[in-house]
Image (cartoon, rainbow over all chains, first blue to last red; front, top):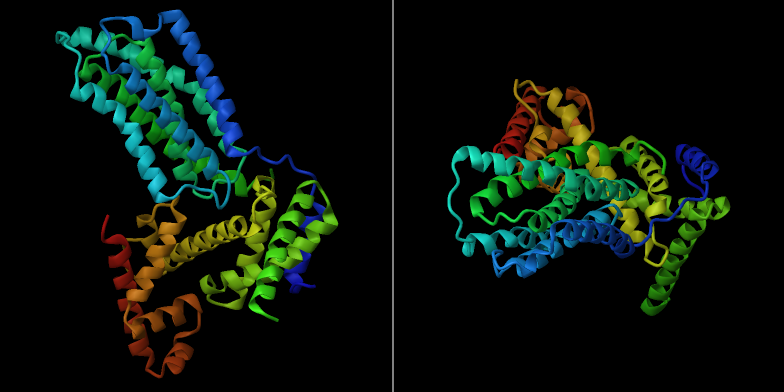
Length: 220
Length: 189
């Protein structure tokens, strides 16, 4: 069997360059490792600040909300890991279902808001800024590890992969913050928890479009 | 040969390719060469629809082979090679089309551009579908003028001869095609 001359020359070069490569683990195994990391972080936050389910002041729907957020986090991370493998990227249906799952936690506190008194603006800001900062800080480890895991692959749609990585990392941070922060007021949650997550995901889309696209320029 | 024989041969071929890539991942250069020689004609056939002339087709095939080489660690030998391979080929082809559209748009005699700026750079499949869809919607004469002058790159005189029209008429058709493509690809942003 032979190829046209320019292709033959290229094949010769590629074959000469063919060193053994470390195969990627299956997405489910990599997700398991990543979820383990998030679980350890969750346990540390709960150990430091107390598990919120026993507290009478927290909304009754909090466990269901956390479950939804956890599922959305895992779904985003799994789709991000799959996006790094050619031919395994999620279809439109899976993406829409994940997006729906990601906004579902909002429905719990929008539908059944905890009765809390409105704070003056200065107090509202003073209580919220640390939450936004903590959200960003808590996102660093899950985000960096997921970004690294996806970058190890070959994402064919880097921007979408970036959104999914951002979704995984920042939804994990949202989950941790819902345990860490005892304020259940919807306006606080929307401004200081949800907006940082949305901004973070937007930033990750840009970062993904740039950094995750570089796999074609560099060897594995 | 019966259709069940064909199917069995094709199944064996698929299994063989996956096995060859598995060996290539382990550094077996001979089997890697065998695989690349086997997939090159497949890729050329697959990429033909995106290439306007033989040089483009050759470039696309080579670019895809390089991308396959760089992504080879992502292949799982327990799965068939073809979906993995053609996903990479589609990505390379979409990238090529986007670059080509950028180049064409720069040549347009209009000030604002370009079709590509309206496309999401991360969404290759959508970009590809939009461009193909827009080209398909053009009237036959405009599409022909656009393909002759911009995709095949022939001279206006040669293009007019091949289209059986005058150079002036061909230029008008091509210009209308540019405007229509711009409206279709950029009009919804």
